[in-house]
Length: 180
Image (cartoon, rainbow, N blue to C red; front, side, top):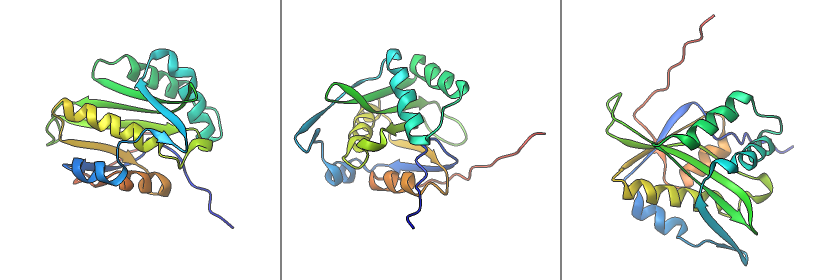
């Protein structure tokens, strides 16, 4: 029996990409063509929110919370935020949302991937990689050298995705305290 993969984009352990630009570009190039169908990347817009929600719900196979929708909407309006959508045959097939965060917790200014998602039926054809490459190029243009994200330790498919695009463990340990 095949294990069902956990396809959640925001999670709980830090991983990061440091100075891996050359390796990354060699590992998956900059092609935006996929089996004869062109993938177009454009900056994310607030009106993309319904498609982003649809993608996330198709990944989770359940409705997302109003708080999650509000969080994504807020990210789309933040000045420090940046995001892109992948269009396939004119339809949103995937998205990535990042943010530039200031110094803190011993970090210099850094880029963060907050959430990434691709319709499950579109996974495995390079859409996530193309979106990540676009976000990395944006961060690099802004002078960002280190990029971080968080992933649940048991989200094997997400860990594999981030590893494939050049991420590795970071020097952070994610801590949690539950309040009653």
